[in-house]
Structure formats: C-alpha cells, structure tokens
Figure (cartoon, rainbow, N blue to C red):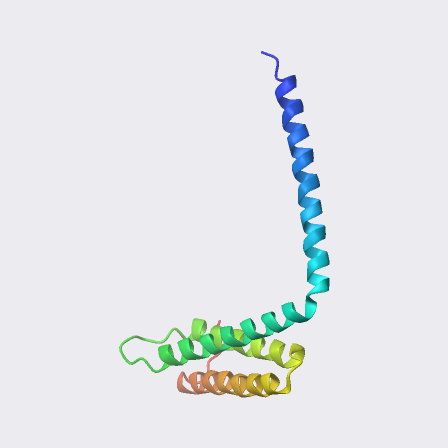
Length: 125
C-alpha cells in the first residue's frame, strides 16, 4: 500500500490551512489596530463588570451563614477583582470609569481586609 499520495495531499492541505490561518491572523491584527479605541473601551467595561461580579459573588459567599467560608479562594477572588480594578484605573480613558474602578477596588480591599481580620489575620498558605 502506497501512502505517498495521501501524505502529499495531507501536506498540501496543511500548507493551505496554514496560509489561510496566517491571512486570518493578519486580518484580525489590522482590524484590531483600526478599531483599537472600541476594543479598549470594550475591554475596560468587561473588566469592570467582571470585577463587580467578583465583588458581589465574594460578598455573598462571605456573609452566607449557611456555608463555611473558603478563606483562600475568597481572598484570591478579592485580589483578582482588585487587579481588574487596577487595570481599569490605568487603562480607562473616561474619568467617571476610573472613579468607579477606584470605588470598586476599595470595596474589594475592604472585603478582603474584613475577611482577613475575621479569620485571625492568617495569610493563605
């Protein structure tokens, strides 16, 4: 059984797929440069809303008396939310969005400090 024609066909298809992928990536790069203001605004808002969701979810798990709090996971969530707020403060072109991110970051820091204080001030291992 001769597999040479099958291998040649597979190689040809692989080369065409690689060329198409390279063209697609180049097109995406040009589109990203062309629409960078819109993409930045979209990224900043997604980061802010993700940070808000983390704050609400973390506060709900922190104040839920039916379930024991997983301190390491909750502190990590608050740190991730604080990092997202920092990204919004640094990258956001709108002043109102930066102020909202500062307020949300303060909420993350306060909830993390409250959790750390209530658990006896132990750092996650």
